[in-house]
Structure formats: structure tokens, C-alpha cells
Image (cartoon, rainbow, N blue to C red; front, side, top):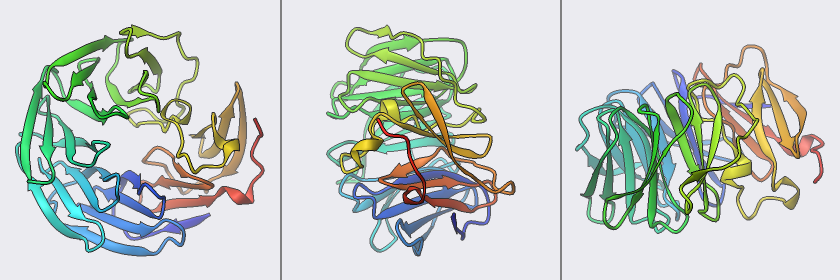
Length: 307
């Protein structure tokens, strides 16, 4: 295991560029770092936020980076230079999540102010405000086609919005609990949401109905967002043997779940305490730590279960 060191406090979010060449990390130390995802070399240190940075994401073409902070702002950065492009200040509470649209023209943000904002990145202006949640909004994500936007909230709801009209298209209410994160399946037909107790719930987007209960609970990840690869999918360039697998943490062990079977791969050091979901590209796995470090593991060194 290699450790990427630079942050001075808990790592709150990780993101990979589309081609997997760069890793971005956000921290409660108010900074965002950009790393070479293969060598672990720090390429940029982005400073501008005045409070904890909660979420970071690359644009689809990897030219821009968006970050969301407790300082109530969303920052758009030029990834190559580390220079700020826009600072969006419409939210009236901490901003918990930020995501780019598939065409890279828009950014959506979710906040404790119960509002989802959609920003036009090309002109640096607010495009739409989406109102409907009654408590903090924790996560937001676009559908693969970009026509829908899903948001997850402490009000126990997942709402699906029509991006063009800004109107709610579907509402999903599942088991009791704060909904911490939500993601679309690669074909856009399903949603997966994760509660603060780690329970995963799946939804049929078109039918507006719950899918059969999933028996998998994200261990040791309360109030975090488990990286759930069997619903979120993996990059098309990933090795075929990884398709259909989930890479996750259990008691500080990196594990693979596939076809109902779970295999331990690697024990992380006892001193390492994970603070982010597992992030994977090809055979590389990245996990943010509570002391500012990022665990970087090359799975080529381990025997993975075959499909």
C-alpha cells in the first residue's frame, strides 16, 4: 500500500478524472489536491475555500474541477492550472455535494439549505433552483443521459427532477433514515440510495417503484456513502473480470463481493481509519483517511475472484 500525504485533516471526498489519470481529494482542511493517480505525485493544491470542503468532482472532459464547501460556495477550478474559474454563492447553508452533467455544461449542487441548484458553467450563472426537500440535501447526481437529476435528503426522500423544467418527476420514499447518497445505474433505469445506517435501497426509475430488497448492508460506513459498484457500474475501460463486482471496506479490510460471495483482498494498517467510500479505476483502489492520508492500493498484486 502507498500513502498519498498532504492534507492536514480528514479527507472528505475523492474523485477520478474520466481517463483515470488524475485523482482529486477534498478535505476539512479547506483544500483540494489533484494527484497523479498512477504515481501518487501531487500536481496541484487548490486553496480558496474558507471552511471544510465536502465534495469534489471532475467534469467529463477533465478540464474543470468542482468543489463544494461548508463556506456555502461551489468553486469551479481549471484542473490543469489549479486556478479558480467561477465561485457560486447562491446557497445559504453548507454545500454537501456537487456533480457535473454528462455534457459538462452544468453543475448541480446540494445543500443544507434544502435547495438543489443547477449552474451554467460556461457563463458562470445560476440556471435553476430546485425546491421540494424539507431537510438538508446530502447528494445529487445526473442521469447518464443528463435529462434527469436525482437528489437525496435527510427528509428520507429521493427526488428525481426533470432538468429542463425544474419540476419533480418522481418521488421515492423508502425505509426510515437519512438518505446520504444516490446514484443512477449505467443505463439510467435504476437508482440506488444509501441510508445513514448503510442500508442500500434500489428503485425502478421508469416505474417509480421499489425493487426487491437488497440484503447487502455497507459495514462500518454509517453516515458515509459506500461505493456500490454493482449498481453504479465501472468504467468501460476496466478489465472485464471486474464487471459485476463490488469493492468495499469491511473492518479495515478491502473486500470484493461478487455473486453473493465476499473475498478479503487486503488488510489496511490498524492506524488507518477510512473517511471516504472506496474509489476504483481499473486495478487501482483509493480510500481517503481520517488523518489526511489517502490509501493507494494496486490490485494487480492480489488474486481477484473470477466471474
